[in-house]
Image (cartoon, rainbow, N blue to C red; front, side):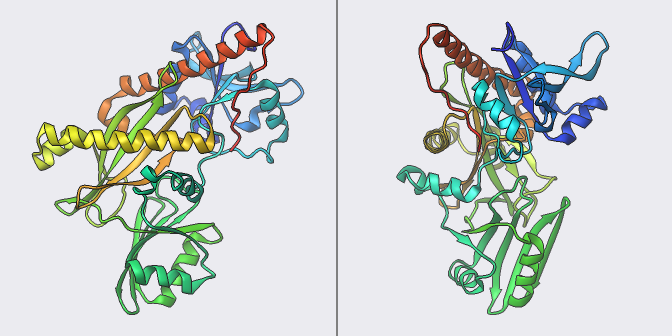
Length: 382
């Protein structure tokens, strides 16, 4: 380690860093920072551009208690990195990449988000997760026949960019007639929808997705309450002992007719099913057991494909027959539903547990190094 205490670098978007320097702090920034300090670590925020090659240091952002404000200063290269947002590609920052390798930095949640189609292929490898995945195919808009064969076969589909977040790269398409298709997507936090012909749909798809790489999925027949669809968000993290743990079961209920919205409401899962459906504790406990089976297996399968992961969130759909479906897993959860339903103390605890896991892993590495033993540690670059 670079100092007497471990160094945790919180890799963030430039926008978050600018907000901190303007003294505007989001709940994720505040709670992750405090959690890192609670483990006894030195903590700072940074982007890959903040790496100073000549000095092998980072110009990071930290909270200056004496000045009571967020400021910048030079820090040692991090022993542990947790990505709060954005993405990193090794070929764009070669010097930073070399320092990561030489320093053997522990990266908790990869430096690049999942390619959602590759994630699907990883989850397909195990029967227990494969059976919970909707029918999915890779898609090229240049292959018009392939697209409409899939739509004609399944009627209701989602077309998704392989790299997207907060539903920004997702369009729902529903077949209404021989040459009639209804589309819906979100653009700049607004719903865009319409009913168009096949030719017009192709123009809409091309305009929305441009040159992004895509895949297409059969729509899950999601259970609704009073016409409002909902999905289940399960937040998971490593404990200090290195075991996966569920920290939150959340339900996000959306307005009628849409698959997500800034106006969606969040609930604790148990409260949602008791309040909205008047289901018994026995039913909800049974549902949670099913959710655990799917999510712990998902965590295991993803780690077999990507290496150790400090946290993931899993989005699930519950269909009209009571079956669970994996919508997707995320490496960099915004934790908004978690925060709104469980409160700041529980969100912070999940960060503390994950950081404690990384610090223990780091201490084992240092101990074995001192004894002259070789050991392999996963350094995950995406």
